[in-house]
Image (cartoon, rainbow, N blue to C red; front, side, top):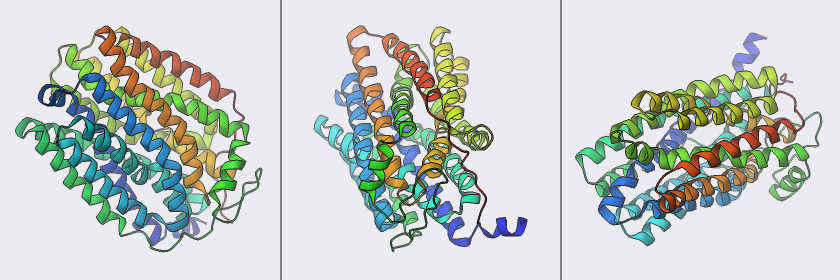
Amino acid sequence: MHTDHTRQWSPALLTALAAAIVILSVSMGLRQSLGLFMEPMVRGAGVTVASFGLAMAVQNLAWGIGQPFMGALCDRFGGKLVVAIAAALFCAGLFLMATGNHAALFLGGGVLIGLAVAGTSHGVLVGIISRLATPAVRATAVSVLAAAGSLGTFFIAPAAQTMLEGWSWQLSLVGLAALAGLMALAAFVFKNNKPADIGYKSTTVAQPQKVDARQAIKEALANRSFVISALAFFACGFQLIFVATHLPNFIGICGLPPTVGAQAIALIGICNAIGTLTAGYCCQRWGNRNVLAAIYLLRTISIAVFFTLPVSVESTLLFAAAMGFLWLSVVPPVSGMINSMFGSTNFGALFGMMFLSHQIGAFLGAWLGGLSFEWSGSYTTGWISLIVVGTLAALLQLSAQDDAPPAVKAV
């Protein structure tokens, strides 16, 4: 039995997993480092905090709107073409940001990078791995991807800060654009052909055995637990993108040096790997619904404690460690829920629909954070909003019907 389980980690799965980790690491590392460019662009290009926050909000909205389409394209045609195009969009978006033009900030940093992230993040990559992995190892493979894929932030955020200290912010963005090209190279590992229709049937929900995004989405939207989880997922985007976009500026206002912001973002990345693996283990013991609710609650408590305590280097790094532990830990329970209820055949489209709610929250978190700062001169309203929304999400998630843990016996 042990030998059979080992054989399920096929060379094709391991190779695709390694490529997906590289792509996810670069994509998430680049996206989460963009907040470091707020202060240089405000100072050097005349961009306001509100306009930068709105551009990041547009990015997250474009990511959310593009995710169902990118996921459906990957379901039908495979990940090679989708990731390669998305990597090119990432490069173009960073080049446009480097021009310093306000319109280019919204088109490049907003729309193009948002669509690029949709094609190089979890909705596409988890779908690729889910289809290659058997049910017995699927949850572990997804957890490894989500955990290792977060490590890029640990390296890219300090690298971006080093560039900013030695180069102009424009040249630093060009350097990040060159890094984005690595994703296109890694994408060539994926197969050209359409993925096989290998989704397995849930024991409780009928599973379509062919790629049919429209029918799969229709069935999911009729499922109460899916809809409730999608609504609660709004809070995840609202909280995380507020922190990713505005934390460097917030701690700068509190008198801390810019290097602390880069260190905090890097710490989020390294702690995220530990938290995601832990979440995957917990899902198999206590179910996806309970783990999701606990993540929302613990994240909200961390925000409330950081907001009420005096801001210092120590409190900021402790907050970053806590948020990092809980950052992408939602991926195993969310993907596990989708796979256990609907199978993996149309995973990209279904994850994309749920993720759209996440990104609407992300849009509002980035935009309202900047807007509240412009109106009041502080982030107090934004922090309080994070606490309220996170508490509601935890309660809402607990009202969903629990689903079976994603680990099932191989047949």
